[in-house]
Image (cartoon, rainbow, N blue to C red; front, side, top):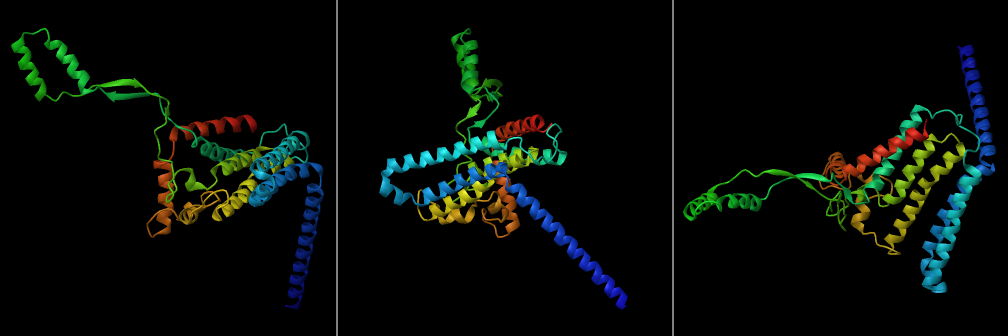
Length: 328
C-alpha cells in the first residue's frame, strides 16, 4: 500500500509539473506573439476608438461648457475620424494576411469554421435587413371589385329595352355574384408595415434582441469574418467590434439611465438587454408567470409576427454566397 501511495504521489507530481511547464510555454508564446506589431495594430486602434467615444460622451456637458456645442462636435468628429482612419490604416497596412497563420492561406477554411461563419454572418445580415422597409413580391392576386362587375353587367343591359332593363337591374340587386380574382402589380416595398416599431412600454422587432442592434449586427459580421480568416491578427481585428458593442453599448445605457444624451425608461431597461437575446432567454418580455413560456413566446413573436421574412431570406442567401466566396 505504501508503494502504491508513493506511485500515486509520483504521478500527481509529474502531472502537476507537466501542466505547469505547458502553461508556462503557452503564456510565453502568447506574450511573445501578442507583443508583435501586427497584434498591436489589430487591437490598438479599436481600443482607442472605444476609449475616445466613452471619454468624450461621458464628459459631454463639461466639454460643451468649455468649447461650445459646435466646438464639442468638431472635436468629437475630428478625434473619431482619426480613430477610424487608424483602424483602416492598421488593417490594410499592418494586419491583413499577416502571420501567424491558423491554416495555409491557399487552403480552404475548415468546415466547422465555415459553418460558424455562415451562422454569425447570417445573423448580422438578417439584423441589418430588418432596418429597411419590408420587401414583398411585386405581384398579388386581388378580388375584382363589385363596382367593376356591375359595370360589365350594366353594359350588357343597355342593349335591351327599358322594361327588360328594369327587370334585370332589379334581379342584379338581389344577386350575389362570385367575385373574380385578377393579378395586380404592387410596390416591392411595403412602407405601411409597422409591426417592428417599439413603444415606450414594449420592445418589438430588433429591440427585443438588443438595445443596440446596429452595434451587434456589426459585431456578428466581424465574428463571421474572423472565423474564416486564416491570419490570426486579422481574426483578432475582426473580433474587436464585439468589444465596441459590449463596452460602447453598456456605456450608452449608463448615460441614458442618467438622462445624458438620451432616455432609457425603467420598463425598457427591465425588458431589454445590451447582450443579444439575453432578455428574451430570461423571459423578461411577456406577461405570463412561467419564464420558459415567456422566453418561447418572445421568440415566436419576433420570428412570426415582427420580422420581415423576405428581407431575412435575401440576407441569408447573401451570407451563403459570401462564405462560399471567402471560405473556399
